[in-house]
Image: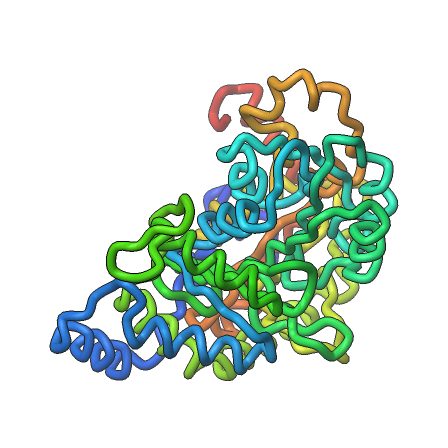
Length: 408
């Protein structure tokens, strides 16, 4: 550990790194290991390891109760959850999605032959812009997928109005939004269905896993069939399906995570507030805010870096942090529409998504979670403050090193 006060203290210029071990974004929260192992042993004792076992059923019931939603269908991961939800709601042709999201949102559609039509986001909220959605609707459009980015809810009412007006299906990728609310109602109650992620990097995890939630009983019945090859009983198949089942070990981890949810959120909230206090007043550094009157999981600490004020690009600040063993992440660079196979598609080549491209060059995600304490947050913020204070000089030095071939 070393104090960061001067330019020479930065590790990129030969100072000691702020952290001896890497500080990751999304390092898994574990919860009560004894409770987890007890559940796994229970599964091993009964030899019921998958196929809608008792732990999966308990997890589904617990999530339904927490969300205040009628139906929960646990699945092996959220990407498969999106695929099942898309199939069950009859999506085809074109579906409008934000480009500023994890690429799985788009891949889940294209994998099934559905063309994702990329929409720009609101510069302030980072979420899909309903005003832009309506301009993209064509006779081939069958649905909209909104993404509650960082756990901050989409303009749900705006999207619902558009969907009703044009007779479109409406799904939500709620991978970031477990435990969050919108206008006092828990995320999970919107649109035709919403899909949560319990990947290891999420604050509540099931090693790998996801859940589809809906208030539509017929849709829920269909999705339960679809996650198990279309089986309705021992040897009766009613429709085409896939293998999207969650296993009992993943459900054990999910239940154990849920028992520690309040502690996980409290730690995330504490770390968020510490970042907020430490970075207040640092020129060009803006911390994405959360609504104080809603429930929130605070699992993402998102900076927007204004290069004109910091004198440093987002990528250069990331480079400085990585040298300190702070593995800050660019989310979601460069935007799905700039990734393959979409960037090579003629349908996407004429896209103008200025807000997406603006944010993709500014956003940086910082470490938080149960393995990050306030002292470590302070040290991360020390690095950022020093970097911004010496922005012009840092650029001059690093540009010189790049020109000499000393660094890339």
